[in-house]
Image: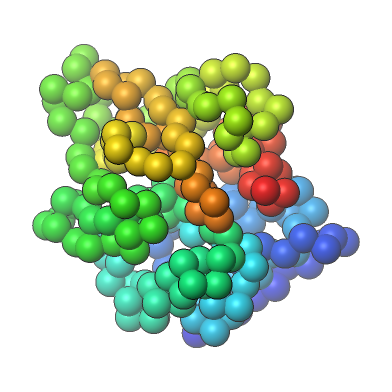
Length: 216
């Protein structure tokens, strides 16, 4: 288990959960640009005690959950967020891991902080669109959503994914993107925040969204 700290001249601290899935440097760079102290850790004690968590990731849902479980990070995340009320932002695969389960590589149970499953885009859903969904697309959000405060109407963000959540029957505030059909592009409910898109790769809109999360 390892913990690294990247310090800036700021009182804002973000703990990035490192479980070995995906390139985290673009996320670190974006947070440092926003003058955050970034703590990168795979230590469940550090994760449990953090007031602001960020769960990034790309790749396989099953492998990601296995990695979180091997490091005992699944328990630490759940206790920190669900029991202690600390806030978390899940990005891309990180958002999906917050879901109830995924059908990727066989059914795998998730962290269940967002009570909805993750499923692959079907050809029927995507229509004439290519899978995976790659590139900038517009997102439609609720006006009162904290993540989208100050952003223009229907801002665009950068997506790379083949699996998605659907927005139906979810409490909290949902934002959607249309790719053949509407899917869940972002979510917030009390201390739980998530984006299917990559804010760290979405230029000005993404940096503003990250800033909104930090101040939420």
